[in-house]
Image (tube, rainbow, N blue to C red; front, side, top):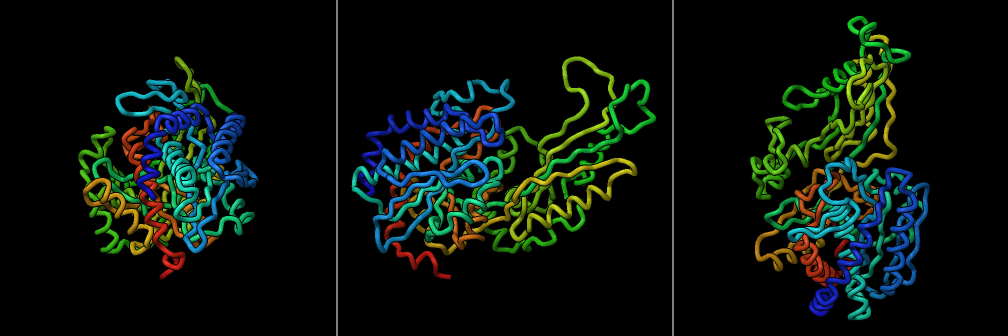
Length: 464
């Protein structure tokens, strides 16, 4: 069955790539309300494709924010039912001046497709959709029952996802979630995503005066908001990168020898990892880089601003400064508890008279992990080893896919990530790209995986 589908996808490869490019030209940035019409346009394109593929029930699942797109094919009685997940929103393209090509005009260069969202995650999402469409076109059905769920707010923390799941829980019932998001952990060996860290965050505003002042008149005798926020942020870590927030991570699961062994099993060159992006080492030297980026929590400063940032000089003493922080959470950590620990630290280190306003991001997602004995994982490893002719590895990610934890909590559903994105493809930064070799690989591996999963029974997905 899968061989005929793979041949069909290969024959239609150029048309599929063209459909991906149409989607990439739409700046579906979910975090900025100004891009609302483009979010509508992305939904229209995807709904039309799903209906054209034969999924007659394609529709929107509404909540308070951007709706999700849903479609299903349920013509395989007795076979497992899978949620196939992707998302149609993307990160902002800023800073635009650092892009070498227009961010929303997909361009092929040396076997790479450059565009915002190409790697994260319109490329892999397209592969998943087109695989389902190809099964329906070639065989009239799929090896498993399929419920496609395409989210519209993944890139801004999935704030509406819980509301969607609560409203449509019966519709979303399934045996497991198979995600096109959550890419590879290596550019040299094939990997399957079995989990990631959790996430929460906040924005802070610090004030030292009622208004800005002339730095010649007030400088040296009055507190500077930028200096105070810099000192406050610097107090979060020691000089090597260890977190200094009291109690932060005290609810994390201890790192077991098995967890360290799993992190170490993936071939990984630390020196090359830093060289790839010109970065400098940071973090607890007692942990490996893989452990720091997948098993340990973090507090990161994502944005810092205040005062005058225009051309030339303005001799101002800023009265207000701002910062955005995100917290990656280790397995076991509760987002609300982590927020509380951070807030307590910030207020306790605040000088007398300085005002601090903290605005937490909505939601918050704990870490998620797929059991190493889950049959989805065995099937995926087998497919990748067959295609690549080398060992494949289960790997945790350092990032966060909120749906994995939310579907586990609210629907009791396990998740596996089978994306094609590589870790060096500049996601969330200028010059994002997607390897066309990965695009072609996905058109082979997704049909093989769905075929293998079709050999299982629903009961296989629920054995403890």
